[in-house]
Image (tube, rainbow, N blue to C red; front, side, top):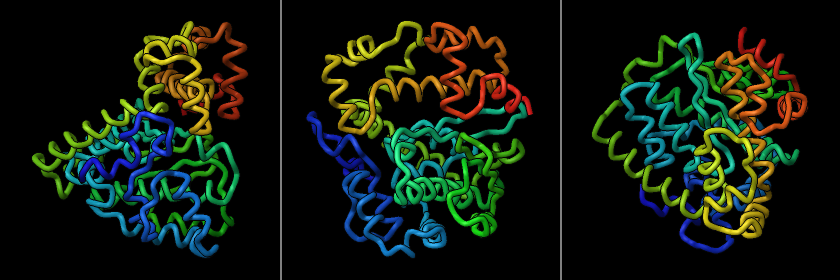
Length: 329
């Protein structure tokens, strides 16, 4: 559970640390040599025999999930007083697990909870490794919460199913959950009745100590990783009116040129991160039943409703009005 498990976060120059992942992913996959960053892990996965990248092998690998697989991160989830608090830990400290993906905890109007997955790397390409990475990430989260809770039931929503159709039932049976493939937003859905149920291995002292270590690790990321810095700065904005790279760079304390250069190293850009953040805010607003779409558009920094509608359609595949109807269901 030492800080050394936060790969590449202690340098102040542009290095591989911008692709930081938790060392637990290598342990989970039994790869032997620990991958130093996301690119190294992708290379290791691609080098595996094809059968080891298939769905059955990935699902088999997630059986290795245990309280210490991701050190303080998994231990804090395992020892949380309730599933609700475990989900809060998972979302708040998700950057520690893998910077390119971020979890958002959404409380539904019916009293349930949804863990939304946002990313800025795996959606950029359609290589087999991208499919492998996304599948492994979601399956690992499912295993983590099921094992920590002693067998919670959940529903998983993903985009188009990337494997053979007959493999869907295999995944559902293996992971003991229902999987829907008609959602543009990847998320894990938990029903209200199980959120406050005490976890079998709940331990307040271990949970508290693990969270303290996670706060230290997250502070290191916020100090050194540019994607995390940008997300942190964006979340601090009351709204996104007038927010641009110049304002965020100034708040971080660097030049726009340095900001752009550092983000380019991570194969992303300020515009992409801003759009990702806008999508997250938009989804939250729509899920809360805020039906004044013009107000939402201005809060997100769009000049008018039509600009917001076009962007939302591009991000999700449906219009904001359709999004409202989906959440209402």
